[in-house]
Image 1: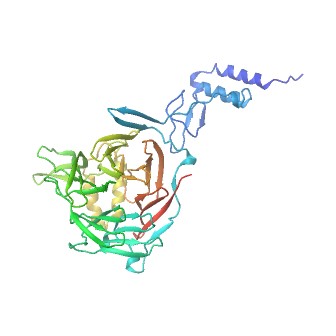
Image 2: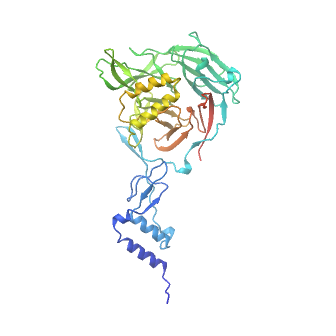
Image 3: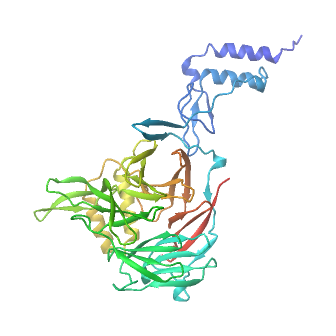
Length: 459
């Protein structure tokens, strides 16, 4: 006759039999998990990009079988404590924040809207509607947008409907004119416009009127200072690189750069902030003298100002430091990950991208010949740009090695915790990130430029 068996008895027997399994056989049991953190109770760490199939420990297999057969009720299940993905420690008064995986779940991740909510620029039309060699842009709280349109040597102002309402500048060296318009910074309702060719800053009112200019100082034997951003007290953070010294040798070299704060009223130096790592070059002997040569995957130092502090990164590793305006180190935000190797496959991709964007085949051929004969660094830079959004989150653009590609940005909150990543489209260069928007330049397949505003969605 048939005998009905209590399912709880089956569960108990299953558990007992599982206990006799070898460790090797237990390691073959896998499942797809949605989120975890560092190695806990035999679990592998989760790869935040797409999940991973991970080995389960024996205790987890037993509990899952018991749950499936109804041996335990949900309320009887002991809850696993949330896995910490970020650690914070103090080192001589400096806050060190290290993250291993993002804090965001998939459902909480931020993203850009599929299409821009505002577009400035056109393929054809009046001169004021066409953009050329856009270097920077800023969206004011009143909806107006200022654009550094270097192709016409102008700072332009557009209303919220995208109509040109004012412009300042023109080609030349006179008051209010530009040679190499390179960046703009919003200071209240005005714009500080930097001319790299003339080494000076011009101040333009929100109505598009030139008000004054001041030269940026020479720092000892350095080139003129280069502005990096404006603090809340209106002083300007600027830097200037040291030259290679007589003790320099052939090989990879990292310049040093001097950072200073500049008075925005007369351009004088207020404070020397300190020495920081500069850009990387390869020193080679050319005609009996040492000269710097550009190399693939060279590390470039990057800076972003926010409030009365600034972020600085050398791109050697995924480490970005926060400094007070006087240079004091306040905190260090880090992602724990191995460096990406720089090999022949990466070089091929780098050169193919150069050729695609070169003006002609002759230039492409010369660039390839140069980079093929240059040595490669051991690893790729960790990142290439920094921005800080309106609420103080740090955005770090991960290094791709190619121009005009889609980009991935890692986002850190004000406490230094790695929140997650946000993707931005191909051909897009971000200039400003607000609480709910990202402003930047977008180039289409015909190299036509637009300034666009994407919405920033935060579930």
